Image: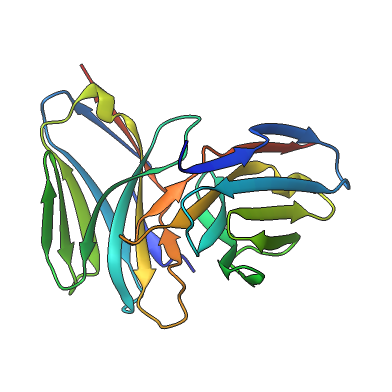
Length: 111
Length: 115
């Protein structure tokens, strides 16, 4: 199916462990984004990519890193997970109409 | 500093009536505004958008109004249906050359439409 696939859908991890979330798109979109959704904050940008190997920080990038080795894949890594990173994470890509296509999200719980 | 604000966390309306969701912004460089709808356990989906050169855009039951002088936009849903019950996010794009399509989102408004 076309669109964006995120994996895993759910994950529980322990404080201090590394975690990688995966995003795969089949739209051949150049721009991709990672957001987190938290109550009272809406969607906040973590990192974004404007091409293969081209990434930059967003509004809430501390504690996160990203990599984009292929157009279709955008990885988000929590180097050492903390409880404040418990959230729902959404990946998105930008289409020609300025609208985003979002993945279904990853619910991450850090215990 | 929240550049896009949705000051109503929730809204409840009766089926068939009008739903009005509001959004305020502070950044004068925003040139494109979008509304997204989100159901539980799903990603947000694009609903409707408006360019800053317009003051109104319609798509079926959905109309977005933009008041640039007040830095305010609103989404009207007429008539509201129970299936419209969802979280609605307002978003804005910076016209700056290095924006790379980044969107700034509001906090979201939970709309509940009662049968």
